[in-house]
Amino acid sequence: MRGFNRYVRGAGKWSAIAFAGAAAAYGTYVGVTWYRYGNVGPPAAEDEDPLLDRFLPAYEIVERHQIRVAASAAVTFDAARDVDLQGSAVVRTIIRAREIILGAKPGDRRSPRGLLAETQSLGWGVLAEVPGREVVVGAVTRPWEANVTFRALPPAQFAAFKEPGYVKIAWTIRADPIAGSESVFRTETRAIATDPQARSKFRRYWSFLSPGIIIIRWALIGPVKKEAERRAREARWKRTNDARCGTQQVVPAVASSLIHR
Image 1 (tube, rainbow, N blue to C red):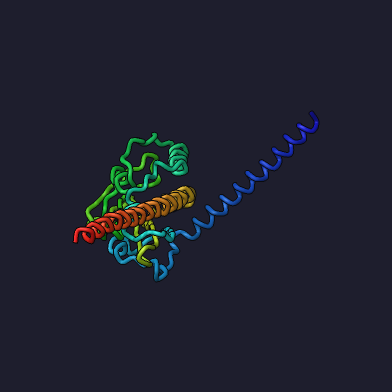
Image 2 (image 1 turned 90 degrees about the horizontal axis):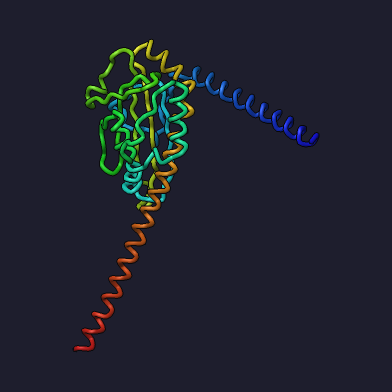
């Protein structure tokens, strides 16, 4: 019994230390994110995006993520459009945690499947698209509200939007070819507040809740890679199988023609 009690006390001690460490790390992250808000440097050459620049050339926060995929750009892009965010337990947990923290009403879980279809059902709008390569999505919103709403605007209106009290957000899914059967999947999110009051609220919101948003982005790229490579393997198998079947049909036909000469 004494041994068990020592074990419980030891476990409690280490749990408290781990919790304190996590809290300290989170506090540091919040402070650094608050300090760095608005300090956005120029993108690297490979991260430049002229299409996105048309709608949000200036921004106060930016998140970029990428992953190499063993599939063509077209296959990767289609897989990204179709990825089901609600199918991820991590994403569902983060969304539910936000609802609890901000006191929001649970959202409708019956939204359509597929990244673009799902986000458009929430109010986001497509600003521009290069078929098979890239799509730019945007909305104006007040992210700090518990029951957040997204307001889509026509492309020209979105680019010029300056109504006080809002944050303009634009994000992309993009697939860049690097070889005939390989590509790089990229996603980028930019945001800017329209006035000082909105900036103050969004800065606080972003400093405290951005870890969940960033994790959702990371949760997106893994399934995109997996699904794109699955589709690419399936397409290669089909081509190989079709070629094999074609050969099997040609040989008997040639043999028959020789026999009947």
